Image (cartoon, rainbow, N blue to C red; front, side, top):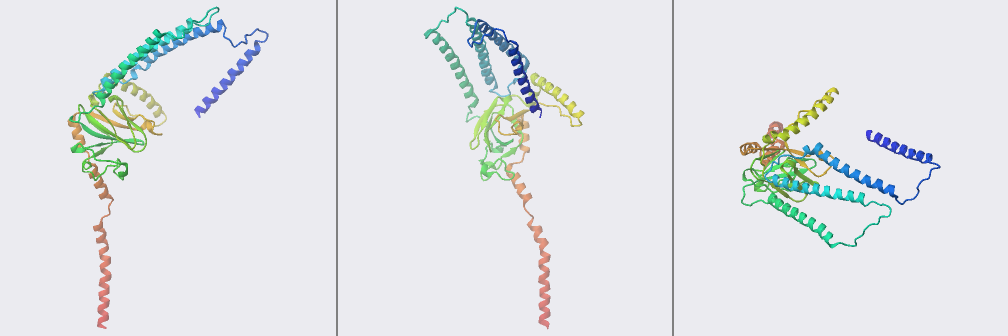
Length: 391
């Protein structure tokens, strides 16, 4: 309703401005007006100064944005490859800002300097091999350097040594939640397919596969610090994207195929909670939540709980109406705590067995209940036959 009212106000404001321009035109009756559509010297001067004004606006807004929202960028990377990722991003942004500053300044300056003026003719070059070489070779060298460094960083991020000791974890995406599957004691994930989804087997594990017998399915992702984790990523329905921002990790989840991403966590959850940048962000968030809680309490509603930092697995594809809420908590901890947590989780095979046992009827109790009723008619029939024989 509010949006409709705003739209109506904007439309009425536009109509009012249009009517004011018509009134202004009527008040100019008798004055000599230039009806020509050809720009005159005054028009060119105005446009030239406007170009300079717009250049100033670009730079002022850029500086304001950096000061206002610069602190919102991600801080300390929590993965081994995060530094390479951040370095590549920083180099790219510095180059973009440098080139943007120079090119925009030149563009607006020349638009002002060479604006249309009386008795001034433009100097036209059909071609200039020297200039074309310069503005071609410089971008080629810069882009080649960025691409080569990007390939180097990408190779380091995606490479997994087959002889390296790693942990295999499956991330399973579906509208609108995540599940994780661990390989158990053998660190080998069993085969899986959506055709096997039934009851408690929500990720479609093939329980006939020997490797699947010790698999464990959980709704909270735990990772040991300092150990490389290889994620096997699947999607049940639509295109999702496994996004773990603090680990500088993202990989698409494609229905019908398995994608992969690997990284080594380097900062535990407790350590990240003590990071100065995170402490400041949490404090700012809780100030906002406190104000919102005061409003809720005034309305007789429940106040918001204080915010505590946690790593999160998010979906970075717009996968449906509840996409914003598709997330799973990630806990990075010591290897000992990780093994203890994983050991306490039941295997999927045992969970399925318990579920089947609970759903099955008790045949022994049913037989005992029916036995007396079946015996009584037999006894009565024997008595009747005995009486008949006596007669």
